[in-house]
Structures are given as C-alpha cells and as structure tokens.
Image (cartoon, rainbow, N blue to C red):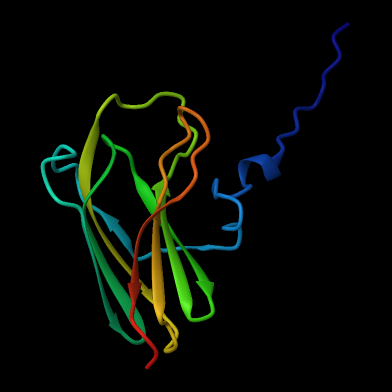
Length: 146
C-alpha cells in the first residue's frame, strides 16, 4: 500500500521578496523604472548619470550602464533623512545560467521625494552567478539644503 503524503509548498520561500544586500531589506522597489534594449558594448561609450530635482519628484537618466546581455534590472530606494540611496541590480540575482556578454543600457527612473533631499548616493550591483555581490558606489549627487 502506498501512502500519500501531501505536498505543502512553502509560500514564504517563494514570496520572500527580492535578494537585497544587508541593510537594504526595507528599501522600496521603484515602479517608475524603465530599461532600454541592449544598445552597445562596454567601453564604447561613456557612462553618465544625471538627476533633475523638481519636487515632488526626482528624475534620473543613467546612460550606457553595463549589465549582462538581455538582463533585466530594477531599482530600489532607501530614504535616510536628507539622503536617499538608489540601488540598481538585476531582477534575478541568482541565475542558473548567464549570457557570456555584457551590453549597455539606458535607465530612466523617477520617484517622489521629500523637500529636504540633499544627497543622492547611487549604487550598482551585479548578479551573484559567480559568487557574492556587494553594492558598489557609482556616484553621489549633492543638491544642498533648500
């Protein structure tokens, strides 16, 4: 006689949220985030980051940033008083396979800000296919007190 054992899916494991680095657990996913199609090879263009502060929003364009070919990325925001921190990382941080190439993407990002925003720190993180990945500070913009 065969005994049937109910299969119970651990929903917590499936919906545990994004793979964010330590300290970013409460960061909010940015919904107004657009990634262009792959548009070039790293080293062929200068990576540029620009932000336009027009309360109640902050608009960002990040051009020629490199990630793996055909790799969707997303952005997360941490609000730390007058400082905000932006993290851009792949949607799938632990892929089973990866493209053996990198390409350039343009990102358009926008979110609502507090009037008191003075500093924006921008971080970029690669997937963890080859091992652990920590955010690297790409740059910082200072808007100053208003």
